[in-house]
Image 1 (cartoon, chains in turn yellow, cyan):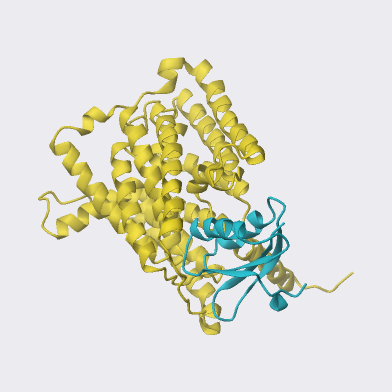
Image 2 (cartoon, chains in turn orange, cyan; image 1 turned 90 degrees about the horizontal axis):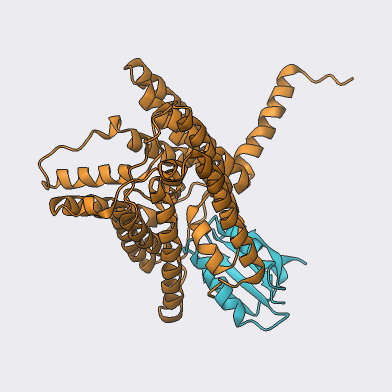
Length: 392
Length: 81
């Protein structure tokens, strides 16, 4: 029998858990499960999870501040998707600090230019598809909107085109690495304390919203925080699911995203079929022209920028300075193109949401959904072995 | 094998580049390395710590390891198969 005190046992356990959560990287399959579960919680709590509307809101505010547009944009502090997305960024920031990985990363000049161009492409694509890789693809597919599947097809084509461009660039545009400053010991030591403080502030913000009778908004900030933590700890990147089959043949992220979508989609099916939430909720994507075309443009952009709507946010959270450029370009282009299309009545011609069970019935939709994403995963696994789709 | 003693056939400087460029450049550079020789990659993208070891063991190549240099970047080593 050992003479270990309760407090020393608690301290040892806390240390072990801290290492497991913040020092060891999480497996992506686990992150895929967590992501689907948090997305389902968001759906039950308020509505479908999205990201692009947060970029739009920021873009609208920049233009408004610059004197463009007379209508005052929606307050970001009361905007559900802005709060979820802000939570995502803060969650990644806290995760980076707690794991002593926060650092301002400099990039070569060309990478900043590509960030701007890629961000602009993504901003435009997200307008056409009425959502980004999250709202227009991941959530739209889970909401059983045909638009999600159409955008997925567009993202695959766009990723192929974007990769072709990167290969051309690599052959024709020489680029040298840039030196980085190593983080000081003092900075490394203080990071977890700053991260812990921000974590406490996020929890306090939830209670503050609750005090003002808006616990729903505070909850969205916290759910977003969890997503940021999950994504950063696992380096969860939707882009890899579309890029890697063409680049290295790696099927891992396709399997993870397909599995995550099966959990998310089937959870949504239960919620909608049982009328816990309105079945038409989240079925508002521009099927098929807007979703497909938007997917292609967004796919090109995410390859050029090196991040999608969600990974841009968590990468900013870990200190990637080039992703700030992507964020601003995305926000401005998204806001501008949405105004332009609406002013010439083109937006409504991009298509409309089509609820899959309305077309195929619930009985056919559920097995078809599963078979479709299992098939996607099996094609990727076959390609990993055969490299038939690898273009480089 | 002590990674610090490795004499690489060629060195790829991918410092400051982010996903997917370090991996893409690694794949391209590796094509010019003769079988049995070693490619050294310098990188700063945290994602490369997953991507390069995973890729480095594919296609008959061997990933030898990586370490964080005092200058603020990571050195990776792949032996061409």
